[in-house]
Length: 214
Image 1 (cartoon, rainbow, N blue to C red):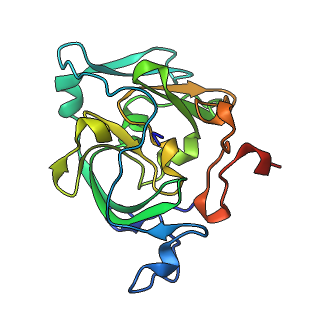
Image 2 (spheres, one colour; image 1 turned 180 degrees about the vertical axis):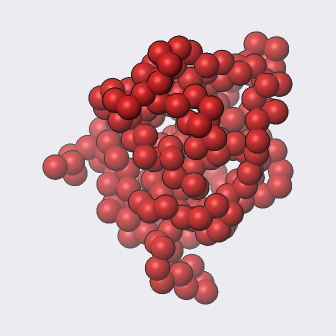
Image 3 (cartoon, rainbow, N blue to C red; image 1 turned 120 degrees about the vertical axis):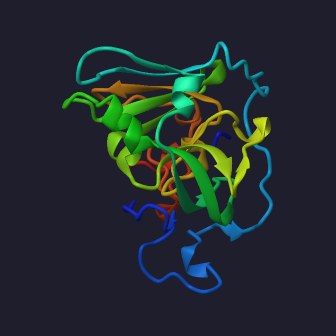
């Protein structure tokens, strides 16, 4: 797979705001287990990165009605930050204290703002993969368009040149090989959501599958 709260930038994120424990157990959502290894999980092949053909787009219900496009060099020139956050995979492993480096999603929202009527976004990746999010999920200080983890560039298998990390949701909401954000005036299910996975994906509520939706 490509995989609440408002944690502060650069702080621990992706767990509960209260009750962090020394061993991290209180930061692990129900049904999860802690592990240090990072398995490669995705649907389909690993795309070949061609920097001269790569761009990142924001379109749909933008405030100005237009499309915003950055080529690879322009995107690399955007302000960067880092977020230390836990990663919760729906396959039931949690990796604690990852330091992600890249462009905060809220930076993109400031540069290419959504229209007032935009409530959701579809994040598009290579080969047509997609994940839907609420606009508020993108505005979280811990949501980041990452190209590094723990000081090292992401490998192609883990999403280089760009993967979205949304620490407060299950990791399938953070696609690898991201290419675009489409603002939506109403929600629309993404790739895994159309295939039986939960539309919101809050790990603290164990929102894994669509049959759990009210």
